[in-house]
Structure formats: C-alpha cells, structure tokens
Picture 1 (tube, rainbow, N blue to C red):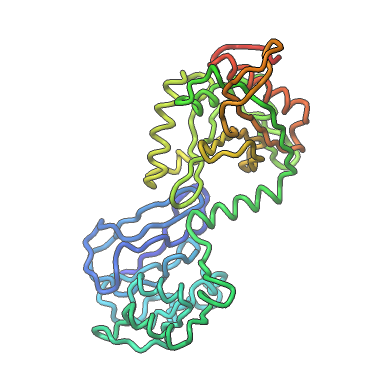
Picture 2 (tube, rainbow, N blue to C red):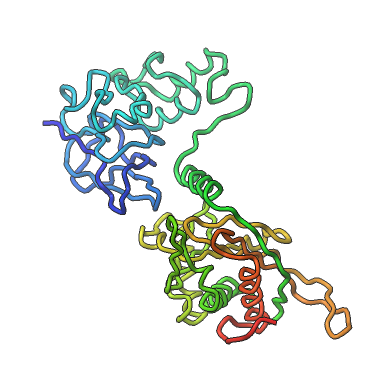
Length: 378
C-alpha cells in the first residue's frame, strides 16, 4: 500500500517550506528513518527522515519549490494508482489546502526523472513532457534533457538573450524576502564615526564589540527594542545576532546573554555558532530572538558601510575596515590602527542624538581595549 508523506508542521508558526534537496530518487528503496529530504524554512534547513520503509514511487514536489504544510511531498510504496488528494496529472484539486500554490506544483510528474534531472531541466527551461526518454523503464536522463535543450536552439528561459537565469531559492530567497521587508517597514538612518582600535586584540574583535554593545545598550534601551504596532517594546535581555557569511548566503546566529558573559566566553560561543552556520548545522533556536545585530566584513570591509536593520530589531552596528592610518594625537601626527563604527537605526523609534550617544559609548569602550569597563563617552 502506498504511503503519502506530507510536509509536516515544523512549529514556530511556519506555514510553508521549500524543498531544498531530495536525499532519495524515484525507484530507490528506503528504510524507515533513512534521510529523505531537506526542507528550508525561514529559520533554518531541517533534514526529515523517511516515516516508512519501501520504494520511492513518486516525488511530488521538485527541489526549489515552496509548498504549504500538508502538501504531499513523496509517495512511498508500490506506486500503483494515484495518491489520494491528487488528480491524474498529480496536481492538487481546486479548493484543496494546496490550491493557492497550484502554480508552484506544475512540474510534470507523469514523466520519470530523478530530482537532479528535474533540476537540470528547470535550469535549461526544458519541459520534461516534451523530452524523449532513453533511460530504463522510460526514465528521462540528463543527456536527454541537454539534447532537447540543444535542439531548441539554446534560447530557453534559463539561457535567453538576457543571460543565464537562476531561480531565487534557499537561503538567498529568504535573504531577499527579509531585506525587502526591512526596506519596506523601516525608515533607516546611518551614523558613522572613527574608532581607534589600537588597544583591541583583533583576534577577539567581534566578541569584544558584542560586549561593548551589550553594555552600551543597557544605557540606551531604545536601541534594544522592537516596534509592535503602536507600542515600543523595550527588551531586557541582550541576545545579539552576528552576521555570518556562508556558501549559501548570509545567516545571523544569536549569541545569548552578551551583557553578563566574559569576552572569552562570547568568543567560544561565537566560534561554535559560526562553524555550525558554515556547515549548515544551526538549530532553529540559534537563529531567532536576537535583540540587536553586529556585522563585520573583516578583510572585505570597506572604509565604512550602511548596514540594513535586521527586522524586527530597530538598530544594527557595522564595523568598517581597520588599518594603520595617520591621525593627530596631542598635536602630533602618529600612525594608529583606525576603523569606523556605523550604526543604522529605525528613526521611528530612535532619535539621531541617542543613536550617536550609543555609538560613542561603544567606541569609548573599544578604545579602552575591552568592552567590559564602564565608561562615559567622551
């Protein structure tokens, strides 16, 4: 008997997910709890095991497609007959839970092709229904797809006259949606000032900045807040997000309790989170609940930049390029290790003067060589 596996409710109020990668192919035998599929949500990527043993009869959703919770993803079993809840073409009937996303479910499942072949067909703009299959049991091979693309003259939607096209998906799709939301919701202003990093151990730069920010946020609570409808919510925890670049795109894991932990403790936690981010092992809890964000491009940083606020936060701090530069100290020109600190803030919640006071407080702590000493900006 065939088993229909539907996209489960992954919690956190999520209503849909993207099929990031299939870990099986049609016709493959799987055991219960074998890795089945990776699902990308707006929090992280989750690997889902197979709930049943049997043959993968039909993959219903191609990689890169976004579908709502409850959509049939795959049929495991003998493959005889149509799965319940679908018509002969494998699409969701009108009026069903998935009807609103029927446009996303147009991949031709009447043909036999592996997820890899389906992906190549999508990239080349080839309709699998028009491809002559040469593989065993009528299965379409990658070469079949490429031959069909060559016959069409190469002017496919994926490789048209305006260049190669690639579908927005995975982490890049989530980044695009998040940045569009931030741009739409937040009226941003950026304040920039120089900072003397001579006293900072650059190997501990980011954890030192995290500590300096957390202590300064205690003095400037409106930057550690959220705007919810007509109310400003002042948060009494200091869980700071840190932007980490990965091969899949930018993610922002959260370092908890930055106001009460030592710089060494923050450094150890940051190293662990950054490694997990680059390996795709971050847990959902490690990506949510930040109250403020710090970003640094390291060696790629420009003189300064204007970071985008990480919605629903109201402020973010960016570290510019740090390098030896001539400055005046006590009437003398000397070479110091200089950089910039930029604070972008939501002007609905934070006034310019308060954002500047916060930035100067952070700089004062950094110029002392540690974020842990209390000081007055000056």
